[in-house]
Length: 253
Image (cartoon, rainbow, N blue to C red):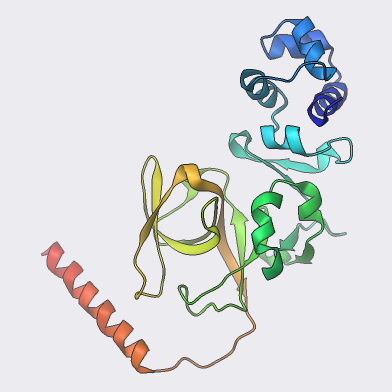
């Protein structure tokens, strides 16, 4: 049997329903469903979508994670049926925050939906941050001062794109860039425009079809206490910003 067939058998058993009930829920004949659960036939896309919606579990989980090894009740079901995230709590019931280290940046794109990958990450507990599913990500480059290559941004998972707001900062996981941290400039039906806080870099567009996850900034962890400088580069940035502000004021008059 395939991993997929094992998974739908496990889920059906846990739900306590017959093959006929699941088949009816997926709008397929029972004999067809039996062949999928038995691993005899490969499921087509329409059935994958139907069974994913029936069990409220994303297709990638059904195909890639062995649900016999994962306690399904301990997984958090997130919006739009996209992904499952494991929840691990401390003895007081506070959510642990997984820390994605710099060395795991590249692996996050393939491991973000794998509970085993997530559970192997180092964890911390910061109960004062409040409720919500949170995770800490490393950032790189100089586009978001004062955060440096030694900083980690703690983000709260965004379930619905309607929750994101202009001028707030977000960790955005995309297929093309991987992990990026930027400020939201604007959004429309099929894309968002983000901008770095370092004004020497320009805003740019991200297609929503490229976005895997969005995490809203709630805190940061840093290891750099250097004093701000007034180097020429910083003065140049200030002049550029003043020019932009003046242009914006003129456009409003």
